[in-house]
Image (cartoon, rainbow, N blue to C red; front, side, top):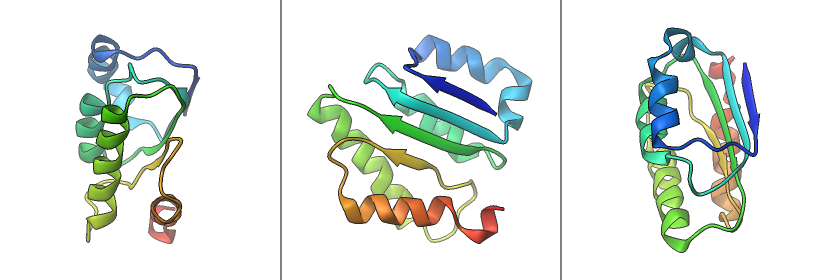
Length: 114
């Protein structure tokens, strides 16, 4: 399990983490108080390929509308998924629709994930 608070994970950092063989075998990857400089695209691609890691991402303001929109699009894609090839993540950011938040929580805590 790896937990970060106030992480500064840029594109370069994320790509370096993905080079570590054991990174792909983590049980839990938790990041709290994530800022907009987090490379969500690289991480989302990793997350969709990873079948072993429970992912918990909690973002904070300030955050641009463009970044919030991208997070919301990712969340919409996750919610629309009928059958998962990966463990559904928990994602939160200020302003996230309450229904979407609850749906993500249910997906994250699905009994099949345990």
